[in-house]
Image 1 (cartoon, helix red, strand yellow):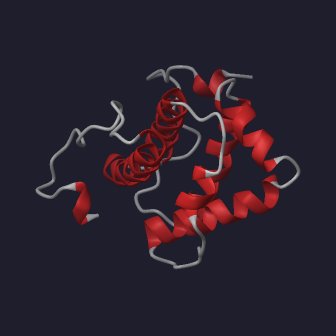
Image 2: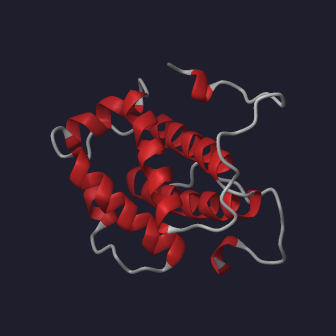
Length: 156
């Protein structure tokens, strides 16, 4: 059912309060919810399914390790993100825009605004680097953060 993706209403509170700080628990919840929606997405789902068919459980754990390393500094991830993604065929700019859009929805729903923004800035940086690898230019969807906290994304 797609009610989870419907526009939130002020009358219906979120099932849990937003996480004020990232934790292994919140990153696990984020990764599993986000990639659940990625799998159902008509544009993203087929690309991921073609690559990960039968290996989703192991990949989700790697993604939890990756995002825990990014958000928490756990250093639990080791791998060649760029090389693995560059091997994928049929990736278009629309795939990046859809991925970033879903990530923004999920992080905004689960985390306090400043935490969500930090996770979004990190995801935009990753997407920008992969986009450059595929297309040789910056994507149109990556723009500076909406809120200036006195430092740029490079300070994250």
